[in-house]
Amino acid sequence: MSIIIYSPITGKLVPIESVSDPVFSEKMLGDGVAILPEEGVVLAPASGTISALPASGHAFGMILAPGVELLVHVGIDTVDMNGEGFTLLAAKDQQIETGQRMIEFSIDAIKAAGKDTISPVVLIGAEINVLAKDYVEAGEPLFEIIGVEL
Amino acid sequence: MTEQSVTLHPEMALHARPAAKFVQAAKRFDARITVEKDGKVANAISPISLMGIDAGKGSTVIIRAEGADEVIAVETLMKILVDGPG
Image (cartoon, rainbow over all chains, first blue to last red; front, side, top):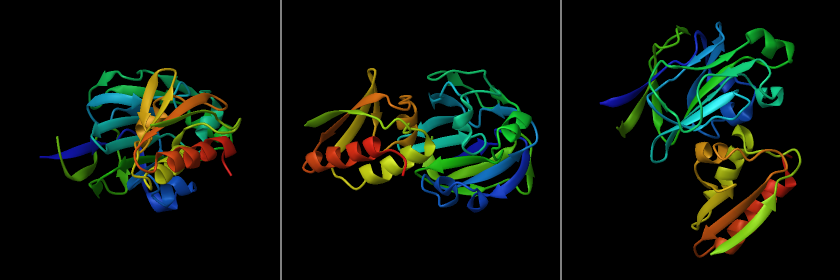
């Protein structure tokens, strides 16, 4: 059975190529999708262990299988906000279940900081097949990972 | 094995964009490379593990490499961290 990644965020889907940061648009890490958030909540996109979760709460990463990693990044250059507007509901090394609340954030705070709210969900180390179209609710299937079995 | 302690550039931290650049450079070497901060060890070709050691601006890490090209690997990767975002 292929691995399904569930949307961490509710909002409009945008091609990853249109994200203003080349690390995402040029797929330097890997392929993915971007979401324009309509609600300031981030849910766990898969079950597993949180491998990276900075105190700033603007992003997190999971290692799904050896060499297969997932990065959820809330907004662009939001590391500069130093956690302002972000509330962490999970911790690094914690075991999480799909759909669990991980981060709450203020869309207005990101805009007030002059940052883009567009939020890339990137898969590192494997190909994806996007399942969602145009608009996605948090918790709905976002993409499946091709060629990796759990 | 070659190892080197490195203090990151004051504007350099191992978050998404710098980690991606670091991984792209590390992948060019055959040596097995790790980055350690405060006892937490990351695999240099794993972006998420690099982001997971919370190497913030100006922090000090140890780069270790093991393999035929370990010396040039450590030198190259050290330079990325010291020179900072460019």
